[in-house]
Image 1 (cartoon, rainbow, N blue to C red):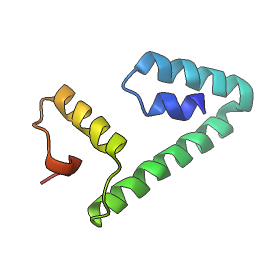
Image 2 (cartoon, helix red, strand yellow):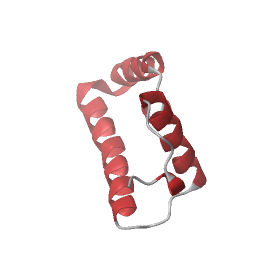
Image 3 (tube, rainbow, N blue to C red):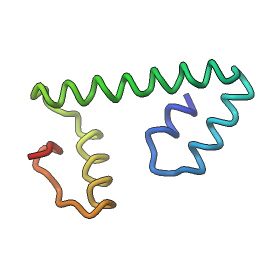
Length: 81
């Protein structure tokens, strides 16, 4: 869970630490599998977004925060134009 939580943050140190702990616990193949599952959840979220399924408030907030960090204007409902 620490790996997934870290992967969803903007903190590369937390991600690196969690990845190292996971590597020690389950090995390279396990880390690859965990990263693949995490990526699939991101893919599913993006597919739902593109289909027009409403976003939860935490998703809208995190997208807005990332957009601000990258210099983009906030989008109504967290969606791209």
